[in-house]
Image (tube, rainbow, N blue to C red; front, side, top):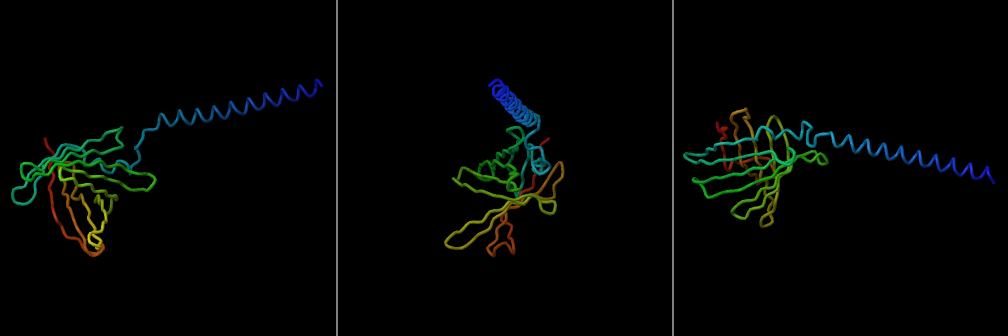
Length: 180
């Protein structure tokens, strides 16, 4: 009988020891996650060039501003666009990198009631975010292209394709100049 009690005690001690090791490993894993900086991968930093306060110009006399900030521990890029006094367009976007899909995702809303959603990433030194939708049974592709990117300025195009992305027409070209 004493032997059975000893075996049971040894089993209990062994189980207790194994469960503590499991808890210790889980705790160590949780502790290491606390020290990892979220959104710190190189891909998650690809939109950092856009962060800042910008004066915008387009066409003959179009002028506006755009203020872009990194928020939520740098995981979200928040845009606040103001086209006044040239046009009555004000809007905002939020962008974030999804490590699961391996692409950037952006949502745009504005004072015209627009809601647009884009996906994409860096291609040939350009940031390209695009979307596809149907109107009257016809597929339309739209994209935004950031290019000629330097520390002090960049160009942005709003483009459209009616042939599945084989050719693109520039609908709006904006030049960004960093506000000093």
